[in-house]
Image 1 (tube, rainbow, N blue to C red):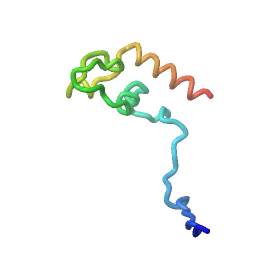
Image 2: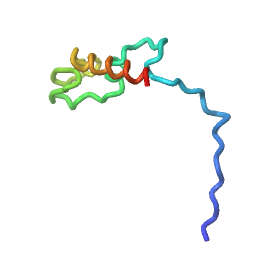
Image 3: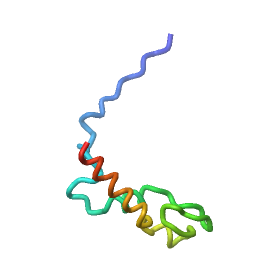
Image 4: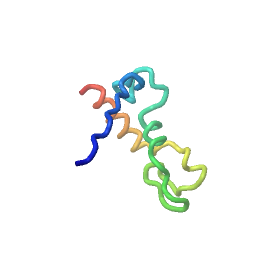
Length: 81
């Protein structure tokens, strides 16, 4: 019979969470947050999110306007549900 593992109680050490990444006090736009979380394509490959060839400078680029509208729409929908 396997020994029981001790249980962890991290409740006292967990920071409070936000209800949404896109709260009223968010400094970034939803598109900028998405770009920050999305890894860039490999150097020399087309990065669909950022709309061009990937490279060191392109990794900091914001999403294309089409993707920007998508993320803005998604954030509005998510905040009303």
